[in-house]
Image (cartoon, rainbow, N blue to C red; front, top):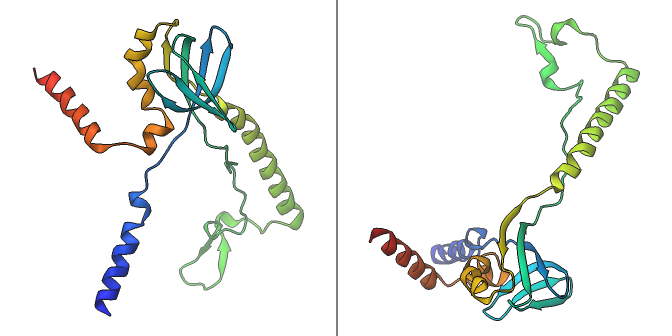
Length: 193
């Protein structure tokens, strides 16, 4: 029985979310000379093309077509925020006096009437609604993470290809730790020289 529990614990630890890799998609706007602006999620970057995924379609754009690449972080959906909270029956509004068993309101306030309670909840909901109407559009505003001006130059594209590759979904799914360690070692060797 002890061995079964140990094996069960190891299986749970192996499949726990600690080992899961978080994959983040990056939105890309590629300005080209022929198509105009191509928009989509950065899927892969190869020496011959930058590959975007837009819905169900895949867009491949060669480096001789690219004028400018702008990468944005994708936002999480906006969640309703409750800034104001009206709770007339919360425990913090009451106190127990030292020699009495009855709980009374702090500061000698009377209990709210039904009309006051309904009015408090309605005004609280209205104020939270106004705050969220202002905050929701502001949460959509995002700045670019990375901007590269290629101007249809293959050499410029190849020089920044590794930087672009780090933002691709393919890279996040297929990271090879040995290659990453080699890159880190080469960078540290260059800084030590």
